[in-house]
Amino acid sequence: MKKDTPWKVAVVGCGSFATGQYLPNISKTANAVLTAVCDIRTDVAEASCKRFGAKEWYGSVEELVEKGDFDIAIDAASIPAHDHINKTILSAGKHLFSQKPAALTVEDLTEQIEIAKKNHVKFGCVPIHMITPDMLMAKQIIRDGGIGRVLSVKCVSTHGGPEYFQYRSADPSWFYEPGAGALFDMGVHALDKVTGVMGPAKSVYCLAATARKQRTCRSGAFDGKVIRTDYMPDTYYISLDFGDDRIGFVDTGFTQIATRCPPLEIYGEQGVISFKEHGGTWPNPEVYIDSPAIGMRGWITPQTWTKSTRRPNFTQCCPLADLVEAIENDTEPVLSPEHARHVLEIMCAIPLSIEKKAPIDLHTTFKPFI
Ligand SMILES: NC(=O)c1ccc[n+]([C@@H]2O[C@H](COP(=O)([O-])OP(=O)(O)OC[C@H]3O[C@@H](n4cnc5c(N)ncnc54)[C@H](O)[C@@H]3O)[C@@H](O)[C@H]2O)c1
Image (tube, rainbow, N blue to C red; front, side, top):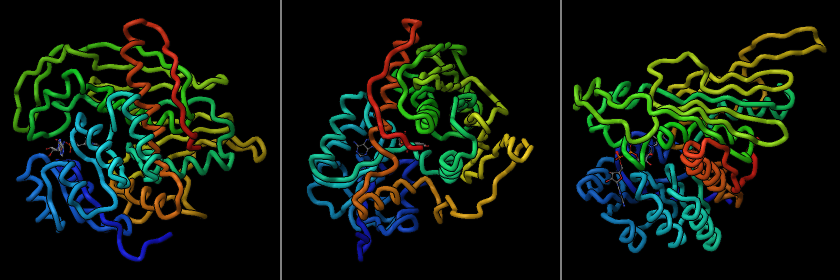
């Protein structure tokens, strides 16, 4: 049921992503208001509180749940902190959406899901791709039979490495250290999209290479710094088997300094959906239609003419709107933790597949999105 007063939101972790995407957009995105912020760097918490007009700031998640005035938390802290933060928030009976990956093991994410269920709170997990306007349009086209049965899907999520393509004020070396890497930074997005379209995979096989053993920062505060990058692969070609002769492919890594490959293509029996680069705008995908009935085949860029798939003010903060809708309608968020867990299981299985040079069976599942 729609709430008369705004939902009170706390943001945990006030780093670069939260500052750019969450803190300024909360009231613009949903019937919600920022009430509290939390960061282990207390100077950052205090400054964010002042800058974004929160009422309270805290230096630990424990203090936040003990004293804070909020209904919903957004976990935007550093990756290793997510599991503890999420379990603390959910155990306190608060709704939550978490940045990725919500945990580093399938077992921990399962525990988070169980805590949410036990406490009757809603729990959502990014990546955001299943609610972006272009993906929702693709879903509508597929459901309406626009490309026929979906046969396979291919996703490219690559760049030349964080030291190559981004201006950074912080040292990017940590991207190449154990616990980080291209798979968790870039692969997570591609795997989220491919499984979102095809449903849960039955097995994964991966070929990988550590193609560049050292790199040099090309801009930013650490311009010229040489980084050792031989700890883990930087190039991954991942094959997924979805059963019923449906397969998917993910090309991810830090070794493609440029590409003209579409980020995502969905191949159907009677058509193809080809996504374009978005850069934060998510344009409508292009669609190839093969229609024997009207004797035509070719590419079109569909216009929206019935129901728009675009939320007003669509930003990276929209998982909050997804969560609020789930709370108010007592449904489950589209950005489900079960989907996030399946993606996590794939990422955890990939090093084993590389080591064994063999496919690895997958066991987790989620409700298919399309
Ligand atoms: N979806 C995307 O496209 C995208 C892009 C960038 C980052 N991210 C994700 O956003 C999250 C944050 O990334 P970032 O780039 O903002 O990192 P960051 O290092 O700039 O910020 C992280 C913040 O979390 C704080 N923190 C760490 N442990 C904490 C704890 N236990 N309690 C409270 N605060 C804590 C740190 O002090 C820091 O201020 C990560 O999960 C990252 O994967 C997502």
